[in-house]
Image 1 (cartoon, rainbow, N blue to C red):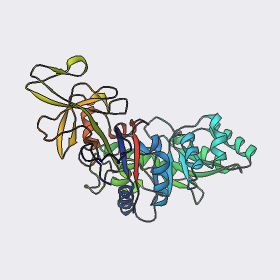
Image 2: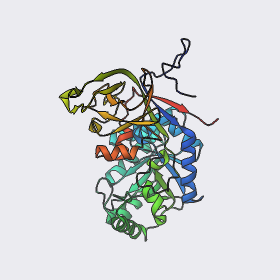
Image 3: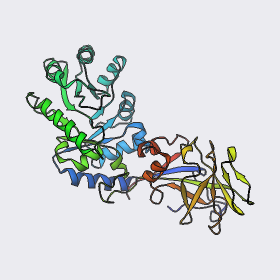
Image 4: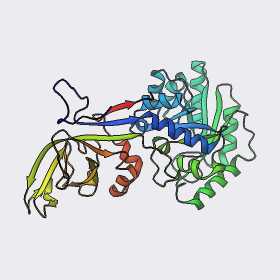
Length: 379
């Protein structure tokens, strides 16, 4: 549906989300999953990483759509995220990729979540809880090949595998590792992959054990890393900072706001807190109904652009908690209620990330709950 500004909206028209909202385009996600599937082939399982509220796109809606449109697994960071997916009726395999606490084992087993483990203590605890519930503990052994965030020492891998498969109360569902920079450090990536391959070479794994090492970038760049499952996050959402898919991916999220105030200031006057922007000439200023309290990075103050009426407008002055200002001097016919694109097809996430000196992940995951999501489904 078209977005109506105040000047075109009639008295009987009520627009939802009048201040700021994000549009989540699921046909774009379906397209991206198809592109990724073409890259990995039919025999590799595809896991959608939907942690951190599906990178700001909405955990349950994005997870449910992906599970019905090309994703074999859903990958989350916490037991709580996995429980939320289960409580919404999603019954596909779900893996919890971050370390879990002992107190979370009961929920993980009860809800049939796959969890990553790195130690004998964790394995034994899950086995004990599994026995008490008479439900299997579904375990993935994480091997630390160099990221040094989570995972067992490679030399301990065989003993830990044996500890899992020798018990009737646990199943070895997978064995994995994580790259530290697969998008732009081929030397370290190759070394990590070689370490992992060497580690599991002589281990007798159960036939159905999933071997998974690849994140988004590795999935695109390193065929040998795809193994039996890949864990894809940013690329599924159409965010491709290194253009590894040659512009084939479509952004799933577009973020909009509206103009809430307009004024003209004279040369020498300043805009926003701390007077960080000074007008060099008579300038037309528009205030937007969005700020860092909604997730727009304050680090983009005086750096970024937005799009209005098909033209780019500079963000000027410090971004405030609930508002921000743009220069609309050279944009004609600007009125209250006009829709402004903050990111999406015209203002790309990687561009904002570079300006804010962060990564694309942070740009989309920081959108707050008061930014309502408007979901668009295939016709």
